[in-house]
Image 1 (cartoon, rainbow, N blue to C red):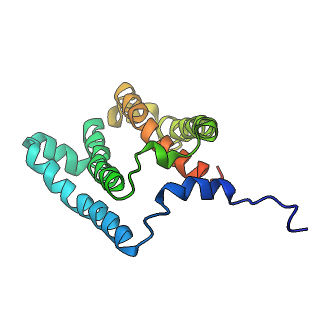
Image 2: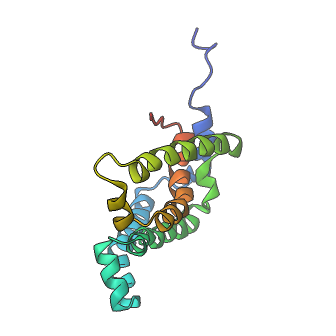
Length: 169
């Protein structure tokens, strides 16, 4: 009976094969340390290059620009992680995505789901009038902000989904 069943972990094994040569714990610790270190240093880096108005917008995050700055803060640790991944395992970003024939349909499903969720959370307002929203969130700038971060967010969710982690919406 067991010989007839297929191996459900076969695709995962193929996906992880490029990293299989480097299983030493020091690599995990090094990649984690670089990622955490970049996260700790990034706010200070951002604050040193921004003018005072940008620093205030970054700290408060109440405007579209301030929110964008807070989202952009994740770029430096992401690049540090990808740089370390390349140095340790010789893998790039796309090798983390998995097979493209599975990744693209998953990415499309995730994008549609995220658009629906963000529409409900950001546009449909269960707590007050539309005038209040225009005051807090100018529609065009928030839509541009959301669309600008849709690709990285949906790519991350699709990576988890194509790796076999089921996400129920």
